[in-house]
Amino acid sequence: MIRKSITTILFLALALAVFSQSKGKIEVPLRFDRYYDYDEMTEALKALHKAYPKLTRLDLVGRSEENREIWALTINNDSTGEALTKPGVYVDGNIHGNEIQAGEVCLYYANLLLTRYGENEKIKKVVDRNAHYILPVVNVDGRARFFEEAHTPNSSRSLRVPKDDDRDGLVDEDAPDDLDNDGNICQMRIRDPLGDYRTDPEDPRLMIPVKPGEKGEWTLLGQEGIDNDGDGRYNEDSEGFLDPNRNWGANWQPPYVQNGAGNFPLSGKGTRAIAQYIHERPNIIVNFAFHNSGGMWLRPPATKEERLAPSDLAVYDVIGQNALKMTPGYVYHSSYDLYPTYGDTDTHMWYLEGSYSFVGELFMRSQETYRENAARPVTPPATAGSASASGSGRRGVNPDEAREQLKFSDHLGLTELYRDWKPFHHPVYGEIEIGGWVKMSSRLPHPFMLPELVHRNAMVVLFAAEQTPDIAMEVFEVKEISRNLSRVRVRLSNANAIPSMSANAANTRLYPMDMLKITGARVVAAGKITDLRNNQVTYQEHRPDLIFTSVPGYGRVEHEFLVEGKGTLRIDYSSRKASDLSTTVKL
Image (tube, rainbow, N blue to C red; front, side):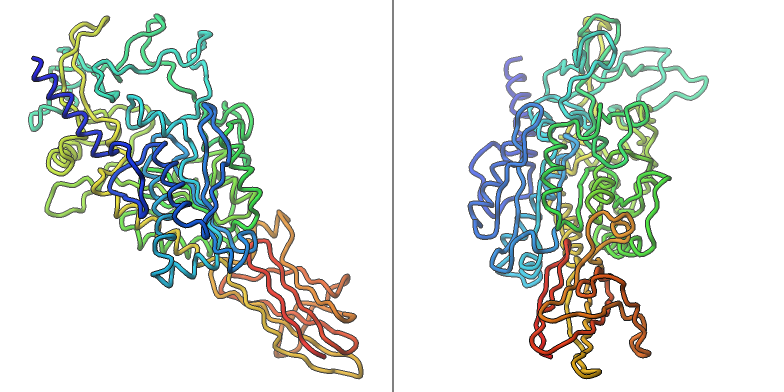
């Protein structure tokens, strides 16, 4: 018996080590064949900053409800300009505490930019031209607790804001319990001839629903747990619930409309601190928020009331369609096409910060294959709260898929993704069994699959960074048209897909437009050239020395100034989202 117990302990320790190695010194370049817990993630960011002090800045963004630190790493080559003067790229992940590989994508992207900076011209150009703001872990409490405590694949998502779910005057008092002390919250079942399930004849670890007229064998009792508060219910008052991805400022709605929204926008300490951090970096023009399951690229809008201007949709499509080719099997569509959400990150970034915003849902369950042909159709997810068709504890998985995923665990996952059913004496139910999928399954790739996942998704971010506005200014005509009066024509062109200002930001006057200004002589008239060949110009009524403009993606704008006098003119172009430019001309 003692030998069996020791063997079990060693097995569990080995399994945990595969997913998150024992804590030790974090060295650069970082490894991505394992997961980093919260402390290791923080140490990894500090290691990158220490290894590349001239290219990085490490900022303490704020603290969480449980006083954990939220860190962000800025990557910028100061010798090519200050960060705020360049197009900004913001990347975050792990806003839901259980979605841990989202943090690994962010960390990998930072590691890639820094370790390959001196070796790869593509990366050097992006680091020199852009400022990157990388915040791998939004929900620091959720990530820390996911590693430290027993959980299901779907728990530890919330911010740690206590909530009385069952309205008994107590908060978070009846969460699931790790009854067998294996570090996971699995499923409970009890033998019941009137039950809804019977043992799967092809794999006795699984259950299948009984058909009409068939005798049952098992009843699923739900997640491991006891009635901690003595109210006759089980696991009804778990952590929180404040969903950090329903707590942002744009299109926030109260909890009776949007579950998990919190009492007011940005009521979470972490979301509020991060929103302030972002707002202080107005140069951010594209951003990615990584989540962990589904294989999707999502963009605004998030509700049916919202619309994208055609020019903005075209920009999204350039990045989204390319992302599909870089991440085979993913889909690309609006968040609303999935389901409506209020107060989420991408809506906030799009409507309040003027940033082209993407959500990356990372892992595809269909990749857990054990067959010659890796392509496998996947059953659409069941609605929230529905039982698994296979009795396996995984929503929306049909029996064939569950069998294959078990074979994947057996042959490729070192049998670590599933716990065989074991007897347990429950204080109320009596003799039951506990088993099923562990917390590191279902939504997370096994560590051997992690390197490809983080690289493919990081390269999508790199592609988007390459599409940030790259503006060139050309004085293409200086012509004296009468005595003491000259015509100066300026062309602003953009080599990339993302404009200097989105149509949405311009239409809502979210922030000032780009400015083109002449100093050094008196400007008597100025305007936008609408037809260069026929000299058609739309002149503005006021302040001819200053033109408000924006430069479209893959496009150009041309402006004309009529200037009195002689001498040297200075022409300045300034933009919130693109780099400033200046030149001089002589009249």
